[in-house]
Image (cartoon, rainbow, N blue to C red; front, side, top):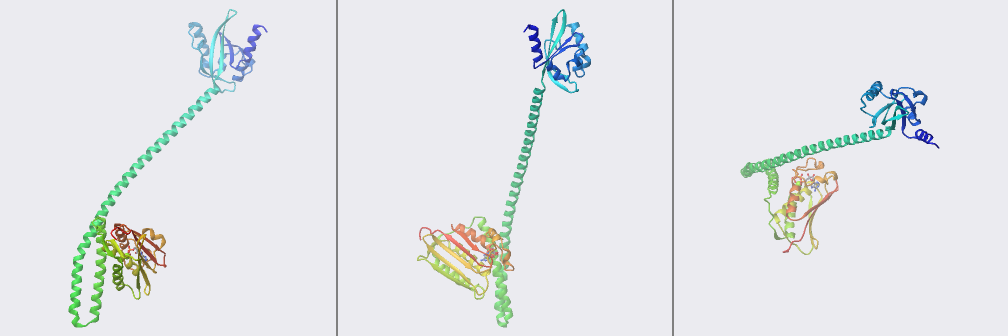
Length: 398
Ligand code: ATP
Ligand code: MG
């Protein structure tokens, strides 16, 4: 194979496009790669101005570029190479790297251009740019979301601490009001009590049963009011932490019998409180005042929330596990859905109807039992009765 045949083969098979033009910009030869890139057949471009393959503004200016170069010999592309756009036969544009060299051949000057298609690289580049932009946008969006979340969180935090502060203030105000009102009510109540007793005394001469009946009603009402006020005051004192248990040894059996007797007097018609103790021991170490108040609260509930002609079981037991006190009735029970609120202050279940009460008893019971280092448990279902159990550990000094 001679030299020129080899060169022709190389040019024909080159991957890059190769175009030769003369000094007037007229295409003299074009290889198959260049033809494919621009979408022309060789005969359509050979003899045409190279400007045919360029988009504006280079298309109109190319002749002037050539003339300027030939005059000044100052190269802009020749010998340098740069990225330009080509125009295909179908009018579409594509990017390529153009390297032009000047060739002296048989006394003539020929410009030889190498065209390296950059479509794929550019596509990849723009895709990358697109991804980067998308990513940046996503990051920006997430950042602003995060920022707004942080702001919201801060606002919520401030709001919560603000409302907590307000609630605390309100609670203090409420406790102060309750204790003040309770104290203030006590004085007029004791004068009413005293006057009722005096009326009772002076009216005895008249032997009028109606006077006796109404005076006794007044006395019972005063008694009830005093109990409520006492509850308010204990709650306030419990909250202020001034109630401190005074532990002492005492006889649980005797103590419970006394309570049973006392409560039997305020029970309903034919309501029987049955007390029973299990165990050989009966001495326990506790604060008898707090424990008495607790048991009275539970038995009053049993009386209040069960009907006439029923039994109320009151049991105490001392064994290896500790001290157990149970109070069981067969009354209206506590609806399951409301049981979670049972020990909250002022809670009253919806099935209490017009049975009177303030909803403070069990709240006080719960606090007293805690002060006595014990636990309260209960079991109840609507219309099937209720059982409360108090559990204490047997203390040293038994
Ligand atoms: P008071 O403050 O006068 O005791 P109260 O009895 O309504 O009022 P708690 O003793 O705290 O208040 O009881 C709260 C609520 O629990 C009652 O209103 C009642 O709905 C329910 N409850 C408590 N004990 C019983 C019981 N033995 N049987 C049925 N319901 C009960
Ligand atoms: Mg009660």
